[in-house]
Length: 151
Image (tube, rainbow, N blue to C red):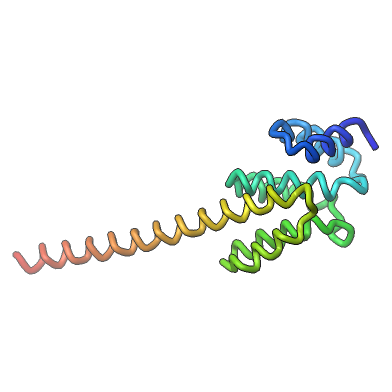
């Protein structure tokens, strides 16, 4: 196990906020060597949850795509769970998403629950915005018809 890998694992166990910088270095190391270790699943899974908990879905998607060539999903239980949480979010299946978060390892559980809350909140905000946009379209149509009938 490399010193960088052990540093990342230690930061995960401490639930430290400075995790992102160490992980970026670890990610580059794994991408350059193309050989993930047995702890890569836990480290990358934690990083993906960290991004989702921060509401940074774009960075999640980009990092997930970038690491897809290196990650072996057959041996990556944690990453499979994070992927399942993401899929449930996209499908709008909140109960299934929360149930998947409950199956995360102890070190990832709190962050997984936070990610579910953020994703659920984001989904609710989008639905409110969409309904507001539909109302404003309807109001524009009513205004236009009022203008038409006044002439």
